[in-house]
Length: 102
View 1 (cartoon, rainbow, N blue to C red):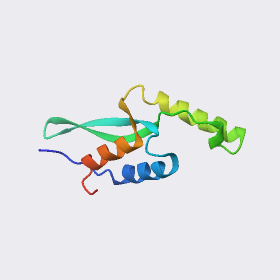
View 2 (view 1 turned 180 degrees about the horizontal axis):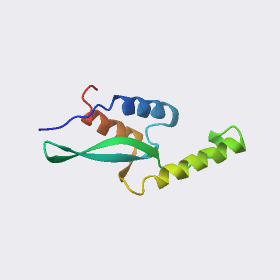
View 3 (view 1 turned 60 degrees about the horizontal axis):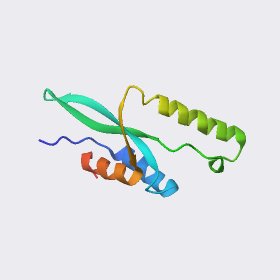
């Protein structure tokens, strides 16, 4: 039996990022695992940018420093997770497969 996860919010965020950055922008999909009926079940719970921000993405040097700080924090948060590098288009496809409503 295939399990489904409500991924509507993450799908919404991915679509917004595709509109802003394009479908080929790379991210790390972050997986979580739960036991369902005694069996392990793995699903994508979120994602973080894999591409380092550029100065063009910020209006000021201070904003750019904040973008870099957030980027480095997000990369560090992957240390204890299962994650997979993929494009936003690939992520959207996987999220739609796991979603109950999309």
